[in-house]
Image 1 (cartoon, rainbow, N blue to C red):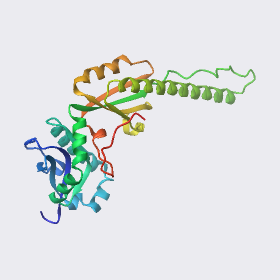
Image 2 (image 1 turned 45 degrees about the vertical axis):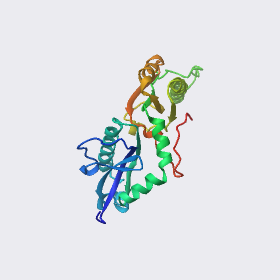
Image 3 (image 1 turned 120 degrees about the vertical axis):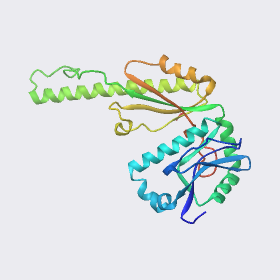
Image 4 (image 1 turned 90 degrees about the vertical axis):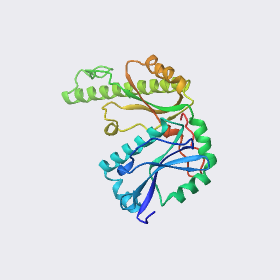
Length: 264
């Protein structure tokens, strides 16, 4: 391989032969399979002028480039996961060559094997819950207006009452979101609560009160979805997304151990 080229890694599976045909990955590069010791890595050859360390520092700040690359990465992972249990690899994981990928499969063979056993027959589902505003602002402070209050004081009282009302709405929504999570955990194999997204990222004006990821047996997917309908309640909007490859439950941490999901 030329010194100005690297290898972009998408996912690791067990080596069961074959793979998605004619699949294009990041930067339109064709995807190929590298088999080694019973595992298979799906990868592409990429230019280090675009995917080298220095170039990536700049590119990761380019939202358009990042979105396009993430879409291509996700497309490859999902195509592979549709065929067999898959351990997705983090976005823009680039190695110097195939020899380095083989070293990875050697060093973390047991961890990859454990991850693939854990996700077999299972997919990841995402659940997002949003607090729904309670309605119009109250006209006055719940304790009642002061008889001789000035217009300015009366306005401040109304604003304080409105703020208390919104905080109460949010608390109720957060409590319901916890109940939703607990109900989903009765079905899911494992779950993880991610940090709530900012409205600018979620694309919704409502405050997010749950951003959960759940690993669910394929055989219980319909049951899992039914829980969402059963726990629906006024004051909270619940959104079910997926299924996906198990991104949240297939990563390896820095020590090489399979990262496990939790309900914290």
